[in-house]
Image (cartoon, rainbow, N blue to C red; front, side, top):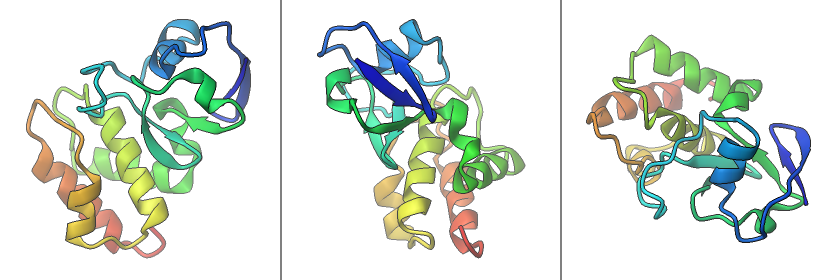
Amino acid sequence: MELRINQKAYQVDADADTPLLWVIRDDLGLTGTKYGCGLAQCGACSVLVDGNVVRSCVTPVAALVGREITTIEAIETDEVGKRVVATWVEHQVAQCGYCQSGQVMAATALLKHTPAPSKAQIDAAMINLCRCGTYNAIHAAVDVLAKQEGA
């Protein structure tokens, strides 16, 4: 089957029910997307599918044929994603960094759909888990982005 990942077409030889995460990491070598829980609970595996956050650890590849998948490797090709990454760096959001690709994907999707989200909208969208507890830094960075013109 053919998958469009990071604006490039890939021919994938995988069972239809193979989770996208394993195709991205094992077959394509795009290891920025992380395995966390395998149950769609933690968000470390978050990618964008047609601009929406999707947990790749439970999403079968067959469901994604004909859709546009974006991983952390290409998030800076998007203007909003580029601003999110720059703000993450500027505010030193990450500690260990393991969850941060999923956090960046969630923040990018939020800001693309809701350019000036309220605190409640940020709280509702930024639900990925962080073992280091960087939630305050994550929320502060998203709040800064929400206040930027054109975010």
